[in-house]
Image 1 (cartoon, rainbow, N blue to C red):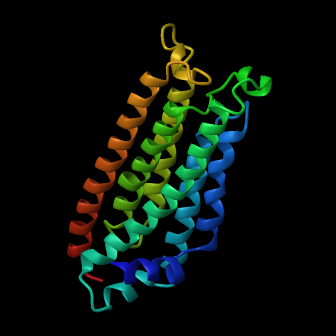
Image 2 (image 1 turned 45 degrees about the vertical axis):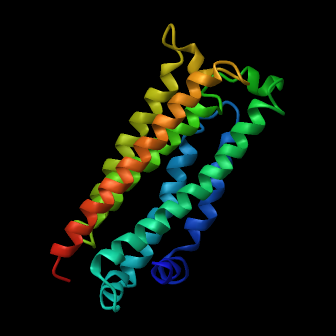
Length: 217
């Protein structure tokens, strides 16, 4: 798997996938829907799928002396690598905003979602949706990706809208707590987000392997 991952990173990927990792730093921006950063990271990964398709990379990979399912797993590993790198940047922003910048007026008066563990858990959910809707959807044909990506966009922005609106619901203000207030509750939601990401990724990878096995390239 190491070799196929290296192939994905060096031959199949678009440079935009790496550059768009930096959108994880959008968690530093006050007064902005910070979860859009997760969407832009996914958009960067989408560019690699587009680049690989135009280069007929799937057929090339299938002709290598490896199992067809390893082609799928290698692509999933690459996708998850980009997602986790961006999560690291988001986590850095969350930690700094909850500690060093916890008394900053520009963040304390933020009307939109604060960068906290609830936001980080929701970012995991968005990446899980990308793996489940788009990556799995792509491997149903190993060629068409417009429809699954459009579905991902619609679902993702519905998630962002709901996440941004929840802390305005009476009794749920703690979802947008700043600093270390209500951190225990937020950590629980963060763990749930990670679990959802893992389940979506693992299950969609299994489905994608089955889809790809049936495709006559």
